Image 1 (tube, rainbow, N blue to C red):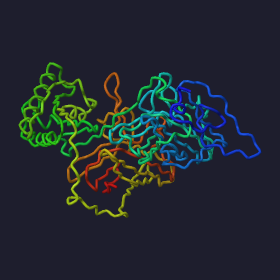
Image 2 (image 1 turned 120 degrees about the vertical axis):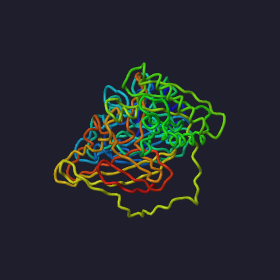
Image 3 (image 1 turned 60 degrees about the vertical axis):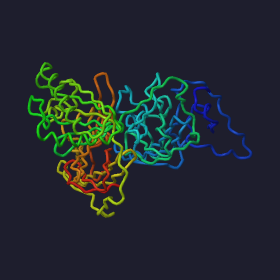
Image 4 (image 1 turned 135 degrees about the vertical axis):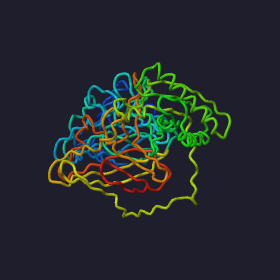
Length: 519
């Protein structure tokens, strides 16, 4: 069986359905007077065709859950991690049990698909993955040549379109393992809140799964970008965990159509130079950009002169040697946002300074800020949607590895009629996400006068980069996530960069600002 992790890693227990089947529990030992069951001889099938178990009562998965959440899309779907195994030190087998806790048939395949790539059909569990917080990477199942992913396939695995009431199925995905052999990781799905601190086992997984080493496969990963901006709109920063990209507003640095720095520019560039000084970088890229006004004959030389002006000023502010600059002008050819709004144009008029991310400073216990918010702090707010009273409760602001933070909150329709709460995706129109999402959330560090925006999953394309919100998706098959029946509650989430502080101001849609402790 050269195409199986089973054969290459270790011998695993198989059920009577034979090799290529994902057993959802080990069979009980046969009675003394019965003959042991025999397994059908395994077939040497390609790595893309390992079937999973069906949702019949006899194959219900009874393993204890390592972590669990509930689908934001459909509250009747319970999502549990029942297996998380590192194989050969470089692959990860993720097993998810989906249970129907409702009274009606529950569709599952469309909800579990990866929204960051075209799939054609909606039948794969391609959205199962893990968040490698330290390397700022969203890891999805491998892609072999013959299918979108090394993961469960509704048709191939005979899983059915629906999960019957009271029943469950177990689906799987085979992904690259997070870097550094961590003991735990955060498991992600397209339907619910990410599940942090799930323990990774180095024991063999309970089942038979396709082996990524048996044929050419492509790792599918998404870079997690964490944006923030100064409250005075002088700059915005994108942090990918490796490099820091500081976008300095040309409206602050220069007068219109000029490349001479304004008096206000000095303080802005001094802050940027301080970041460079604390960075291990030896090369700093300085790139000038324009909006779509004017033409290349004007924008190209102007953007270059502005980049050169910023380079000279930064050089004068630095306190260490050994740093080399690269200055270029790109005119209007590399916009960050659409040029169809004034705010989008303003943000596209910029000088971008890119360098290796500064190393975080060790915490100073003597300077630690003590939270004045107790366990009974009020983290609730109320509002209206289509005339119905809507309640919001923040359920957590949790610090993850790598400077990431996970915000979770619940929204409840407390009225007597159905209501759509579309405010969750009504963020600034200059934010260019591929699809709408619950992105209308901001964290603010009042002391540092800095605002943090939801993270972005970046996907390279032939025309540049598509960005997807690292937050609850409310588009396509998940469009109804913003629709609330009377009394219905849904839980939402967002990823952010978290500064080294104990309390942050959280603003969600039109709800009142809340002071939220970081746990």
